Image (cartoon, rainbow, N blue to C red; front, side):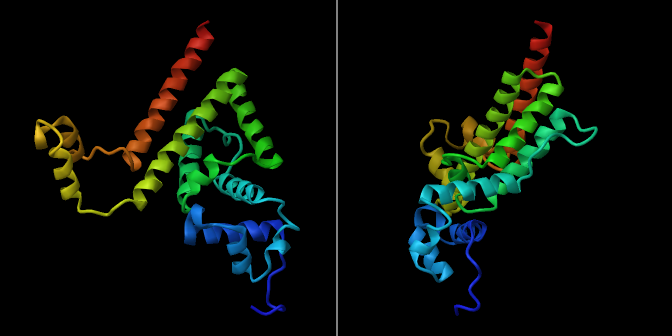
Amino acid sequence: MSETKRPALSRDTLIEAALRLLDQVGLDGLTVRRLATELDVRSPALYWHIRTKQELLDGMADAIVLAAGMGPPRAGETWQSWLTRRAHAYRASLLAHRDGARLVANAASLSPATIRLFDEELTALVDCGFSPALALHTIGGCTSYINGFVLREQAERQESSDDPSQRLAAVAALLDAGMDATLLRALREGGSSVGEEAFDHGLRALIDGTTAALQRSHTH
């Protein structure tokens, strides 16, 4: 790349380039030196905009979180509908990048703008009748659920792509009831620990549990 065509370096351009590189090489393959090569500059040039690799990773994680869209419920939107919409958008944002959940789960800090938006979301739940602590537990618990769920999904993407029937046979061989074991029956019926149906089931359980907790808090 010639000097005249090289894009101007900034913190935002570094993060955008790093996310593209992440999709190519994964989190373990992402290094500052490799990013510098991708941008056709020397590594020291990057440190004018980021002080450490962790700061770069934190910026990348922040970009993924913000890409999901943050903020309070829309006009007329219930907190249950808002939380469902936010959860699906957040999961999609994590899945949009290789190792996205692992990157976000290991972030050391988020930007002031993200923290302010988070506080707006907590305030919106308080306006819906939540205590501040219950609001924090609700959003924190939902976030942890989604991070863990997507970590599993992205890990399975990297595992062996054996024939599903061979995998079922291998599991059946471990169980006394063989193909009639409850686990195998569940899998044949479409049960899975990953995928849309499994994600929605867990999310509904979280929302139903929060609804019950909110009702108890009002009773007391």
